[in-house]
Image (cartoon, rainbow, N blue to C red; front, side):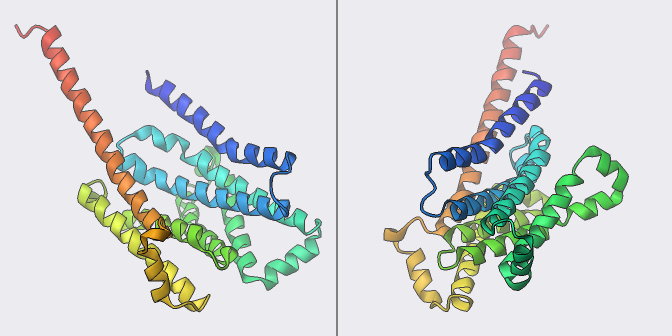
Length: 283
């Protein structure tokens, strides 16, 4: 299969997968399957998917390097745009929940910190989505990269918004924070370590520790819960898998997938070399 065909199929599959969450949400809404507070549930679902797609868009650069597969760069833009669109839908549903009263919405955004930072993240994501086209890249030239560096503070704001919105149970937000830590640590690692097994192990451990620090700090300073109580829960097998364990497993999964990918490449090369030796005469 040609590279062009692979990229076409990859883009098509990506588009379908990006649409599935909103289609599932619409189906559940139509079937009255969103619980007693469907609007609130829909708000949370779209917000969660906005964070998921934002993290995936940030993960594609590391994935391209560690898996050594260049076509992944061809879907980064549309996943980033999807993150912005789900964030917009998240906001629109919230506005609908306020009966489309924009004055009330504006006052809530000003008064409530988690809404303020969430709205700031939304504005940044929308600006990045609008300027993601080749035309805008040509217009802005060097400033395009500078503008799109804002994706990192936007991700931080989105995750903080996720934490505050989660209130007492910040398990999913902790996972998001740990995965974001993995992505950021990777970017600061020396280039040689980024694709080595040692580097990937350090990333898995570092992201897990970061997730644990985020979790303990949140419960300590926001919920006023003894950090040792949370730590005991994290190492209790009966409560597994906790958020920090999920982050560690995600890091381990990357190592396994990289190993499988590299073994497949090595076997393919050996088979190709053997085939060439058998079919092409040496003299």
